[in-house]
Image (cartoon, rainbow, N blue to C red; front, side, top):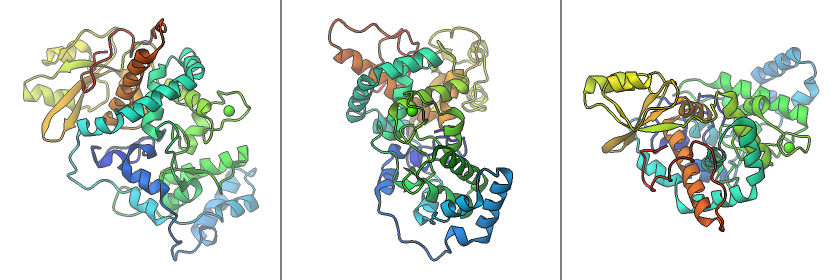
Length: 394
Ligand SMILES: [Ca+2]
C-alpha cells in the first residue's frame, strides 16, 4: 500500500493496468505470479557496482540526512546503508508492462476472487474477528474491505515479498532504471523513511523483507505510510507491520479513514453507460476521480441502478475485458478512497469483490443461528452478488 500513487504496478500489469497507472501499494507482492516468483527467488549475485556505502552520491545523501536530523548519527547511517546492495531484479520489476498489453478485468478478477483465497479470507476473518470489528467501530471501514485488501496484497500474509527492503529501496533510490519516468526521488524519500523508522524502532534492516518496491508486511505498507498511518492495534507497544496481522488490520483501516473514507457510503453502484459516444467520452474523461452528481450523470444518459444517498460525486469507471465489451460501475467517493491504497480501478474492484465474496462465504459457513449481519453498507443491504457479477449491486 500505501504507496503513493506513483508506481506503475507491474503487479497488475500483465493483466490490466493502464500503463501510466500509478500504484500505491507497491505492487501487492502477492498479487501476481511474477512477483511471487521474484519474491522467492534466490538473491542474485552482487553486481560489479561499488557498494552503496562507498559511493559519493550515497555518502552525500547520508550527510544530508544527518544534517537534517542529527539524531540519525552518521556512523549509524554509514553502518546501516553500508549493508545495502544493488539488486538488478528490482530494476527490472519496476519497469512498466509492455505497451499494448490488453487490460482484462475478468481475467484479473479470476486471479483474486477464487476459492483458495476466499477460504483463506474466511479463516483470516475468523481468527481476527475481534480486531476487524474494533477497526470497523473505530474508523468506520467495513471489515470486509480490510479483509479484501489484505487478501489481494499478500494472500493473508503468505506472500509478503522476499526482497530485503533496504536493498530494494537503495536500488530504486540510487540506480533507478532509465526507460520509464524517474521515481528515484520518491524512493529516496522512502529510504529515508525506512532509515528513520529503523532507527526509531530498532528494526533489523538486515532481516526486514518486502516487495521489490519496498512495501512491507500483511498490508504492504511503504515506510512513509507505516510512519504516517501505522497503528499499534494489538497494544504491545510497537507498530509492527512486518509481523503483526492485528497492527496491519488497524493500519489499513486507519489509512482508508485518513484518506477520506465515509462510513455508510457504498463504494459503487451499478450503472448502464450512455449509448451516445460523446456523452460516454465526457463521463470517462475524469477517469476514476468522482466528478459528476447523480443527476449530471443521468442527464448524460447513464442509467444508475438507484439514486445514491446524499449528494456525493460519482465517477463512471470503465473496466476493460480484453476484446469483450467493457464493464462499468459508478464509483463513489469511497471507491476513490480505495484507489488511494493502490491507484487502479481494477485493484479497487478486486479488493471490494474479494471482501464481498468472503463475507458471503462467511455467512454461509456460520453455524446457526446466523451471526448478526453487518450493518456495513458494502454488504448489508443486498444479497451478495452472484460470483462473476461485476455490476455490484451495493
Ligand atoms: Ca503492535
